[in-house]
Image (cartoon, rainbow over all chains, first blue to last red; front, side):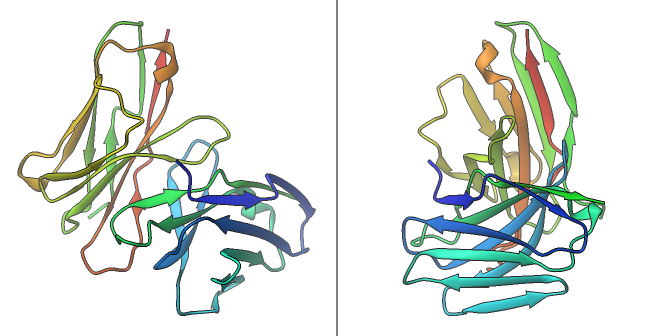
Length: 112
Length: 114
């Protein structure tokens, strides 16, 4: 089963624009993570936000978390062609820190 | 340490054959995960280990799938009597026990069942 659902499924933008992806989840969580995957490769961790945090930044990435709405957003500012990839949110099950469940992902295309 | 490694990277087999994938996690990581990913989908949880103990196994996993982690080091995922629906990327990830939650993924093993 998938805990998170990303929106949109696919996003195409011009280089230099900002990209926003959203994630909704179903049960309470301890933390939420965002990962990136280039085609045919493994996933790479981008950022983790804990349930008691509302916003977090890492370079050109900004993540927000709204636990009341059970949703998170990932903003990539000043996008580059190299940002073209699939982005996944992942959550724990809320009762255990051990199991990590991924959503279906957003496919981002950044056009040079 | 060079990260999580998986072997083989690609496997083509005929329906009905058995296949085995190996994962070598980052050496100090005691948690190891297996996921399955099909094209255009997110990774689907299969199972995870803490040291040598298999703590959870997805209900989606049929009895044709088995995973082991002897001595809490490398892990193997075996699929018996493969079916065409088993064609997917099998991803392994590891994490430490420090409650950062971050998973470190290998490059995956792609299985094609003909």
